[in-house]
Image (tube, rainbow, N blue to C red; front, top):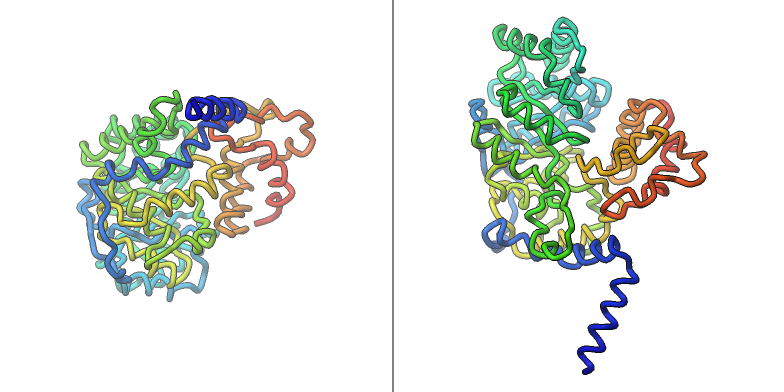
Length: 422
């Protein structure tokens, strides 16, 4: 009888929480349940060595990349020693873009990797629009080659694609074919982490238009991670088609590189919970690398200590003991402020046209990464950004996020914070 009364009280309490809050609480409380079947069992954690321990074929490109690779989105001028530190520890794949730190990232990589070109792989990117002309694209590529001090890049991506028309542009394909014939690029790719991601990836892979995809992928996105404890709640995990797309890419020999693997990268928040030498970053990387459809990952590297920490996960193909509690703690701390890449459920919620997900991405750069320059640069590309939020009395976006993010309160402070010159 006591058990029955307790169950009734609990049911009433759950009802009062509201369906969305109840689901979110259930997900966070149970986060550690689903990983082990995905990874095939946790392993003991040996002493970490700050070196690359695994090199993997990147699809059919002929590239063998370090499983943990160097992301340069925050690389500044004069930081050649940081790149050298990565090289000395076996990192051989360096990801950049013509827009990163105003071109400084490419310049720094070019200086640091000069004389080592036959030992490393360089990927760069350009945002090629749906109406971009191939001559303009060739000019952009040649600018990157000059900054990188090289005759070619190993992979050249159409960057941050969120509109399938950008991949359908015949000028993009004419340009990449021409650049390949001239020996200026070895492989072509598409990167993406925003709305309509699956549609764009499906098109690129099915039409054979890419050799590599660079895609946002972390433990907070894969529905398989949540399946055990959401099955009875009619809860739709974000990006339900992403695992299918990764499998399809692998089957077709398309290289798969993961980014945004740290779900916001608030690493300092996790230090009190890290025990026995294992860190949250390493746990998150092991989760990504446990997926056999992922070849490797890139992560922004900002200090020698970060590089050393990150390489502690190199060589792993499954979880380690202690990883699940770390992922659980992180989700509990950040689950109601982290915008899931490519979710798009909030799209159209604002009648004033505020690009909600893109503003939240700029917010992540500012508050999670602590990089105001990157945040303001990203925000400057959003036109009016979140300016409409400043005078919105009854925000229609409230309640638009299925994960419970309070969009109205998160967006309002962003315009005065980020609407400044980068």
